[in-house]
Length: 270
Image 1 (tube, rainbow, N blue to C red):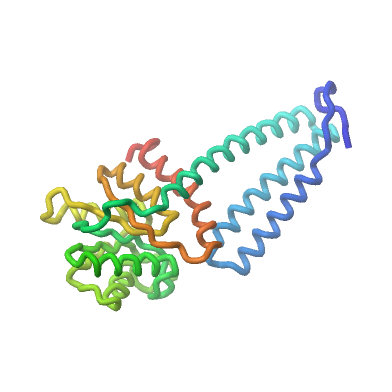
Image 2 (image 1 turned 180 degrees about the horizontal axis):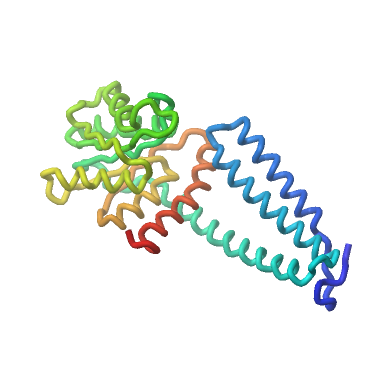
């Protein structure tokens, strides 16, 4: 269907129904994931926000075609289109950086300190992502027995103990000497993981220590970035992310986590 637009000099195609159909499909997916895939509920929120955006586009397009406040509707529709294009370009760039940065650095062997970043635990049991990090750490520590390992992570909702304590228990069960495990039990996010862990390292007696960091592949680009902002040159080690659906979810989430890092260091200068 084609009508005159709000200025009356161009045709406006009514694409409100396809836009609403996209919004509806995204909404159904978001609800399904939220109800039946608890481990990736962030993805449902992401899809839900996209569905709202497409419903808004559909409503504005419909208003412009039906000449309901056509000037306002047409202008706002164009603004949303431009904002979406800008966001999509930034999203693609950031996601490319995250994927490209998810590899183990060369020369990570023989570090003085190994930082293992925390992740969620279920009661006292490490999640799949955290278990992967700890298995990778245990293998590294068996090959580098003189390395001190810092396990970092506080206690969050649904966690009976701190992540650091659960990580230490897991590593000890894997045969790692408890005397080589340093706990950092306060951090509630990645920024604090690094800040507090670097504080432990600074209080030690190793001058100009070599530091490696273990996390899942999606997390490594942000780990390098934060370490650099904190003034440390670290090598990162990839712990594979279990299950493709988890990897996709966490890679998408990194876009928003990196925005937080940018705001923290660049905008607020903390």
